[in-house]
Length: 294
Image (cartoon, rainbow, N blue to C red):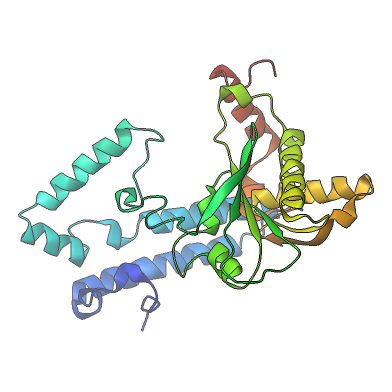
């Protein structure tokens, strides 16, 4: 019998399986989704169009899920009964509040319960370098002895540094310092119009500045470098620059997390981002004043 995977949290309410009508709705939804996926797979499209079609199909599937229909979803229906419909009023107010502030999309996480330094990014550390683009954080050792070779982590430019230090027992920084590793993490500055003319060279130089500071603070001429996502791209260019200038020996080790370097066929992102789209985005940025002089 057609049924959603047990790990599909959209249909965990027992009513989806126990109520005949709801069960049939879910089965019809799953069958339609499987058919759409099979049609996309049998279309023999080139890789770019195949990714685009699958992206469209997947998003339509998610949008049309019966769990998104308030009075069909058992949990939503029960909440409406329990609150006399006030849950819809609260949701509408939240939507209006989200639309009134940038980036004008519905909030997916209740950020009010998070506070930097209280329940997120709580591993102790201090800023040891501040430049135009970065602050460099050195984390306090938590062991009597530490490894001689320090580690510099370059997070994505689109994320905050505390993506590496989420919370106690869920922090890679905490794990490393508890294991005796000297850890430094770059915190990227939020760019604004004043930094519109800063390109990749500036970001690579920021990593080089951070490496120099790590060497100076630790009294060593070698450090390990790890880049994450977009930070991995910048770190890779940094490593290539060090190799080209005869300074690769400054890196004791080099690693990458979830970093795409070959973007010729880089999945959905590569399929959606073509030259015309990039030119349109650049033109829009220029109209908004983000690319003055380009």
